[in-house]
Structure formats: structure tokens, C-alpha cells
Image (cartoon, rainbow, N blue to C red; front, side):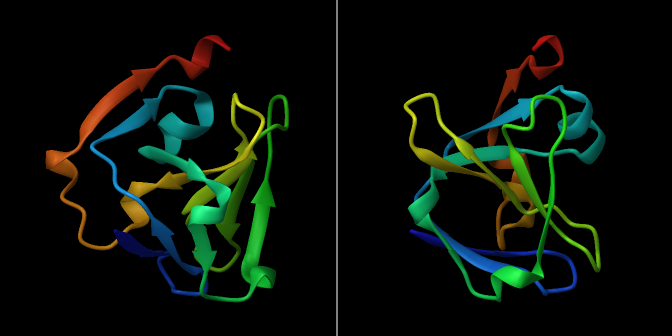
Amino acid sequence: MAHKGSCHCGKIAYEVEGDFNEVMECNCSNCSKKGFLLWFVPRDKLTLKTPEGNLSEYTFNKHKIKHQFCATCGTQPFAFATGPDGKPTAAINIRCLENVDLAMVKRKPFDGKSL
């Protein structure tokens, strides 16, 4: 299934292929302050529909995750990293996807604060 997503102002728009029934809710300083609910997919399952130049990037701590955000509205719809298997991965913030009933999504806690 293809899911459409975007930042608040629309300067970043994308589609991501796949399905989820559970997402990660991390308690690290970044994720908890921003309320991220993350779904991990292979990087090639995410297709940008707007120019890549519209993305801004933020890294912190070990600088392994490249958080992508909109410089205009500040929304962080996804991040890029390398998965445990060594393959390029995208962490999708499902709060930025269209037509997702967040109350129906199972959340799996992750203790990122302890890393």
C-alpha cells in the first residue's frame, strides 16, 4: 500500500510503500520532545515528490540518524539511517502520513534515552 505524507506547509511531500501495524515510540530527547511515532522501511520504499533541495538536515548525539525537516514549517516527516542489517533505512514519522488513525496504531516503547 502507498501512503502519502508531507510536512505542514507542503514543501516536503512523499510517498512510502508498505504497511505497518506497530510503530516505535522512542523516549530519547529528540523523539520525545517532538512526539515521533516511527515506522522503519527500506530507504528505496520512500519516494520524494518535491525537490530534495527542500530538505534540511539535523543530527545529534552519534550523528548516525539524519533527521530531515522542512526549514519553512519545521516539521520532521522522516529520517535516514543505516539499519542493523547495514542497509539504507528510512524512519517515517507516521504523524505526517495522511489518513492514519493514530488511536488504532500499536506503539512499541523504545528506550533511546539509555543509549
